Length: 498
Ligand SMILES: Nc1ncnc2c1ncn2[C@@H]1O[C@H](COP(=O)(O)OP(=O)(O)OP(=O)(O)O)[C@@H](O)[C@H]1O
Ligand SMILES: [Mg+2]
Image (cartoon, rainbow, N blue to C red; front, side):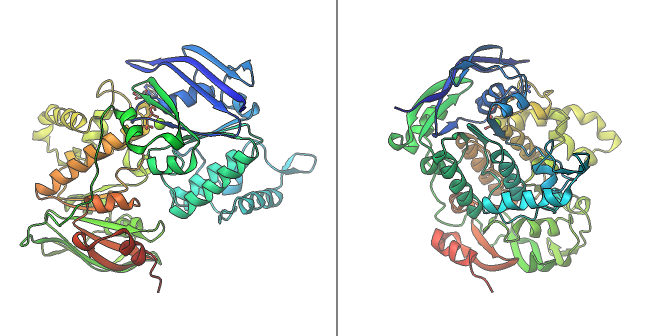
C-alpha cells in the first residue's frame, strides 16, 4: 500500500475579484510523480503557493505526514522538506550560478565570518556534475539561457533534503536534451521516495513521466486518474470540457504571387548567427525549427537590432538600417520575446497599459484623444485572446503565467506590425488557448501580415508554418515546404552539423 504523505482538503482562496480555488482536494503519495493540469488560470500555481505558504489559504485543511501543516512562508515549507520551483524564474541575475545555488547557506571560512568563494564553487560544481548539468558555477546567471537558468533553479531545489518537490512548468524553457536530463533526475528522486507535483501544459510529457493526474478547471477540482489509463483526449476533455483536434497543415496558404516583404542577406552576429539569409513573403508563416541553442532567438535578436550584427536587410524591396529595436518597430516589425518577464512585459503595470504600450509612440498629440479608442482596442484583443483577468486595470503580475503571455501577444497585435516575430508564442499556454492563438495567427496571415514563428514543438511547427527554416549551430541547414515536411526531415536538418 502506498503511503499518503500529503492531503489537501477543501482548499479555498479568493483574490480581489477572482475566486481562484473553490474547495479543491489534492493528495500525494510517497515517491509518486503527480501531474497537476488545467487551463491557464485554473488555479494550479495558486494551489501550490497555498501549500508552500507563499500566501495563506482562506479555508481548508492540509495534512502533511499525518499532521496539520500551515507554513507561514516558503522557508517553513523548505525546512519541512517541501521545495517549489516556480513558473517564473526567481533568481538573482547579477549573482553567479554558485551564489544563487547557496543563497542563505553560503560556504564560509575564518570561523564562519568570511565567504569561501572557492569552496562554494566546488560545492556547486559537484552538485551540477552529479545532476549531469553542463553549467559553469562561476558564470553570472544573466549570461545563461532561460533554459539553463531554469536548470540552476531545479538544481537548487533538489540540493535540499526533500520529501516533496513541486515543479511548476519546469520544461517550458528547456531543450529536449535538458528535458531528458530532468526526467532522469526526477526518476532518481522518485526512487529515493521523494514525491513530486508536476505542472505542465505539454500533455505528451505527462504521459511519459507521471503516475497520476489531477485536473483543475476554473478553480474547481475535476478529478484524479491514473496516467496509465487516461487518454490524452480524455485529459483535454476534463481540462477544457470539450474535445480539440489538431492537424498538421497540408499545404502552403501563401498566394503564389505574394511579394517578398522581408529579405535578410548574410546576417552575422557571433557564433550563433552565421550567414543567415532568407526571404519572408506577404501572408507567410515561416517556421524556425531547430534544437534549443541552434541560434534561432539570436538570429531574431540580431534582425531586430537587439544585438550588434552585420548583414543586409530589405523591407518591401528597400534596404533598411536596423541598429536598435526602435528602428525595427518603426519599420513595422514586432517581436514577441521568449522571455516575457525580461523583454515582453512591464509586470507592475496593468493589462491595458501593457497592451497599448507598444502603440504609444504612434500617438501624435492630436491623437492623444484617441487614448480611449486604444483602451477599447485593448479590450477587444483581451476578449479575442480570452485573457483571464477580472478587469483591464488588473496588474499583469497578478495574472497566471499563460495569461501574461497572451497580454504580450495582444500588445504586438494592437501595434499593428506588418511583420511579427513570435519566439515560442505558446510556451506555457494551455491547449484551449493555444488553439485560439493558432487561429488568430492564421487570421493575421490571411489578412496579409507576415509571421516568423520560432517553436521547439514540432507539432506546432507542422501545424502553423507554410514553410520551415531549420537551423543547427548558428546556420540555416535547409528550408522545407510544408507540403513536404515531416518530423524526420526536420530532425535530420536540425542535427546536420558542419
Ligand atoms: N496575486 C494575485 N492577485 C490576484 N489574482 C491572482 C493572483 N494570483 C493569481 N490570481 C488569479 O487566480 C487565478 C488562478 O491563477 P493561477 O496562477 O493559479 O493559474 P494557473 O493554473 O497556474 O495558470 P497558468 O497555467 O497560466 O500558469 C487566475 O485568475 C489569476 O489571475
Ligand atoms: Mg501557473
